[in-house]
Length: 344
Image (cartoon, rainbow, N blue to C red; front, side, top):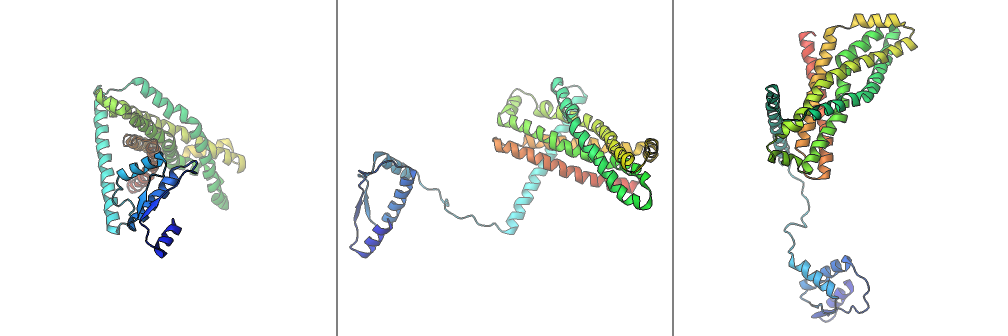
């Protein structure tokens, strides 16, 4: 094409171009793209083109391409938005998400109110199945993580305590840390990555398959039928898992203390008993219950907000995990400040 244009510019002006495709074998969309560029260049130079020599399929595709006008600004390059526009969009997005969260919390509260008066509509079998998935099925990963966390705390504390010959206080460090903080936090993070993502993926898939719309059409509230059993299951099982994580974490510290620092079984257990009280356990259990609510809210909320595609389900699961972990860390920091102020 470039040679023809050069010849047209240097020689006598061309008025008409024809095509000879007798020897043309196979062709694909690349030929259509090339011909569109040719016609575009020739039209600017007011050169007529004869399409009679082209194959019938090529001519039909060219006519079809010419019949559909190009969208306006289709070739416009993406421009960077001004800073204030970006701030405005981010603020509107935060406001939208906050409104959705408040609405979700209100609907959840109404669902719990119906549960207390015996009017909530959900299947008890779904509740027991969710409790099993949140509780018994989560024991292996909770056991592994809690045991390792207890061992790590013991090793970290022993490095400093050994400088003063106070290895016996490993029991205090591990027991208090697990009871007040680590058991609840690690269990919450485990459930966020394991159960919160599962909730978001399950409800998101129902959104894709229009099962949630079907429930609404039948007069069944998705908040009662889908969200309420999942929230109940996490609220019930998180304190129990936290207690179990306390036991396993203390056991991990016990293994390190008695196996590497010459602390007897009786000494370690007695020191742990003296260091801990019901306040420590109660604070950890309360935190775990709060974290369970946060994980359930984040997972179900992202699932209910899921779009109508497979990629949206993955995005919902990812967002549920990130939201849950962020909320857990933020709320734990707030509770730490409050307990420090009131002296707990």
